Amino acid sequence: MPTRRILAIAAAALPAAVLVACAAAPNPAPAAPAAAPAAPAAPAKDTAAACTAEVALNATIPPGADPDGPAPSAAEMQTWATSVAGPFATLRDNAPDPLQPSIAVLGGVVDQAEQGRRIDVSDPKITAASNAVDGWVHDNCGFQTLDLTSTGGKLGPAPAALKPGPVSIKFSSTGDPSAFVLLLARVKDGQKAAAADVDAGRADFDTIAEVVGAAQPTGAGPAYGTATVTAGHYLLTSPLGTPPDFAGTASLDVTVD
Image (cartoon, rainbow, N blue to C red; front, side, top):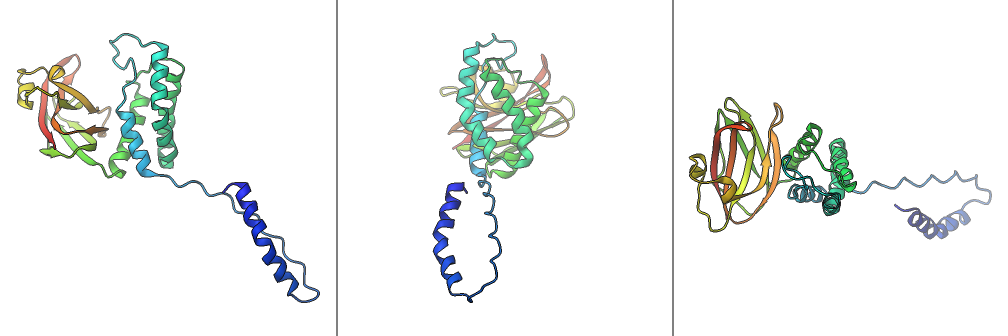
């Protein structure tokens, strides 16, 4: 509570204290010193706001994320930093205390962009911090979930349908060939390719679909990600093997309605 508000409460209570003193015995014992005002309580954290902020942050891609693409300008990086400053502040202020070390790492990313510097999104510290935050989202935000495993190149299980809105992804890979990443992509309007077409090479994934979410394993534990889905036909696609020598893809169809 602000100091001014504490003083206002004390002033309002003063007349009652005076009346009590006047009604006491003629020679009362000295009153004990008044207790110091309690320290202001920390603002309550809004878990729902933190969850929504993380989904918004994951919907943005920093300029220059493609390591083979052209270097972004300082102005492009600064514009991106401005666009994510609000959601990041909401996440930072409302995430639980154990998550704050990971939040600090992500804050360093925003600071770097504010200085106009390109971000290395493959930096293990950054990916670990992002994975920690998305793992918390998966366990605490109540979003619909996609929990999948690639076992020796076979992907599943996955629900046949999802509802529009946020979705939290949890992905693990075991066996050989390993899965490099899980991509959640919406098939573009006017395209009619299915998962089997992608795996058989009859459809170019990059042409027919737009990626909206991803989860990339970086160690022994599962990978996490978030996305927002709208009505339409989606593909869950996982490139198998190690880039650039992929051994194929494992894909599944998902409908959002």
